[in-house]
Image 1 (cartoon, rainbow, N blue to C red):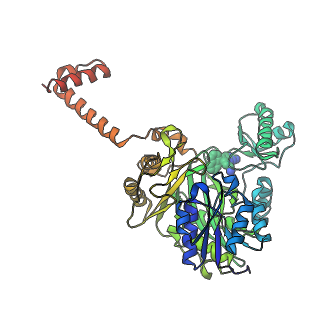
Image 2: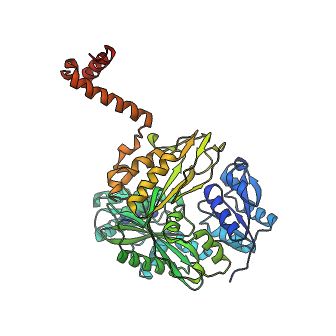
Image 3: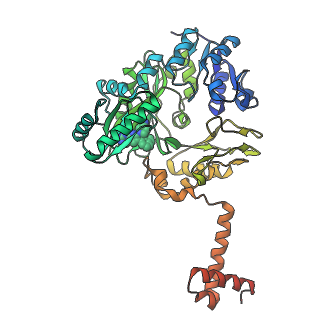
Length: 498
Ligand code: MV4
């Protein structure tokens, strides 16, 4: 059992820092925020019981600097560090330093982080534990070995970096002739990006869904809390998540859940964690395990009623997961939209500026986890996530309608955001029909041309005039081309619609 602690340093910023601070307060724990020069007036600083400035805006010299964080912990007398997600959350070295400083790292052991960090090691370990992985090879040393492996697996194949993650150094190969060049390129990229040029091969899955299982584990029990559907993403950044997945039935859920428990047990996992799968044609394959609280944790919280950050804090103090209870049966449907300072009409280009106005939607089944307030300066130093809008309703259709209403109420003035994109998705037929895969965003480019509501009004007015003109004016009706038709309608309107 861990040392008890009464004070927690939150080594993070933004919405997740606020989320953790709130959970600390409810658990009777004192919270210590850390902040960079750029975050002096940020919400997490205002919410925390105490706050310590740790360095300049550049994350490498503040939120990513283990020494400054440990120094702040020592100075404040914190007995534990919660890393949130991103930054140092999945650094085994940081977790080790925290423990060596005599503090509790609120997360799994450094060994569990390490075991899941190396892709090929994790793959081998999962295979040994009976967890299905995408059919594939060990790391291959030469182009000849890669070609032999590809023939054995069958085309198309994916060449992946052993040390990789997040899609870097991944190459699809469709035929044997292309294997050597792709092998060389993938090895070179892997060496450059990860300092480890080893690559391996997998069968390429054409149209998979990305579905993940939430795990909660203490020293005695490893429990799963069902799945989240995370297929709607762009360049490995998730945009929308939901729970449950519209394609997972109770049988598949319990099969995936049992396998996720096997995966967690294989590394003696403690705390909350997520096992990611690719799912295609009713089959599922282990992808990786995330050894942290995830951005999308609220959709699981909504349908299970479990407070996952509370679980993290309590498990770290040696208290039984779920207070010793069984996993609750899920109720209803939850959707999360990530609201980021990015412009979907310009390839999700990060947008900067001052938040001039902010209206947060409220009402039954609506939750906002945010890290901004009026006057907040959105810069380029950190992740562009401003907040997450989460809804919960009795079923998926009603959750979508509720999200649409909430998105219409949300107002963030001063920066471009992904809000209108989300609104467009909520009405898109394939989304409504749950026709999803990891290709959803690229397969729906029309959603990226966000129609401005004012522009929509204008084009609607033009359509009405065209229709009326065509019915009542011979020159409009007999126009030879759309251009001429437009000119004729203008003339018809100017002349008083005779
Ligand atoms: C794949 C795949 C298709 N086939 N592996 C991307 C991130 C990395 N962790 C695994 N990834 C993929 N591996 C095989 N054999 C497609 C992806 C993939 C993906 C996976 C999950 C979520 C989003 C994705 C987006 C593009 C590609």
